[in-house]
Image (tube, rainbow, N blue to C red):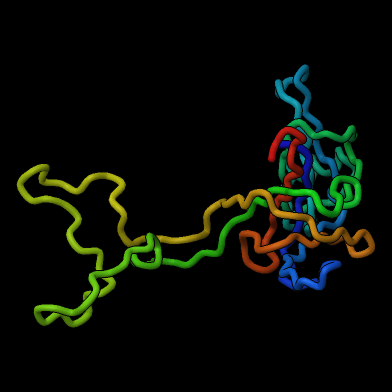
Length: 214
């Protein structure tokens, strides 16, 4: 990982490029992130990283320990924290990091978020099973069933990892190599081409690509 910011997914919109193509974009609000901790390889943590905080939170909803943590950085309590290793910019405790400080139009980024939760889903939706096709032998509602899940006598069990129905979504997900379409410093926002994980108003991490990464 390298430099990055925490943001909030606002929704989607579309913009036109110079050739008149309509590009679908995700709007991410990334108001100034506050540096709440700076870790160094020589320090007790043993590695280089920068901890950023985002989105104001009421003090009464913050634990005493976290209140002290934010107070040491000279900022009010925040809702979410994220750590970025090998931060490319020199920052100090209490500094603010803005979208225009890190990102430029046209570069590629990775976006990390928690995907939408879909509850319990069957094998067709969860794993892309094709179903059994045409109804035969008096089947009433078997098209989307998983079918046989194991042998009988040998090995007399179901193998671990067999794809079945179950909880789907609500997983930490990364989408790589997304293009920054527009940086809007006046609105503390950034437009990213395509879709990113998560529902509206959910928090995402925007990771700047390293120079050697493609």
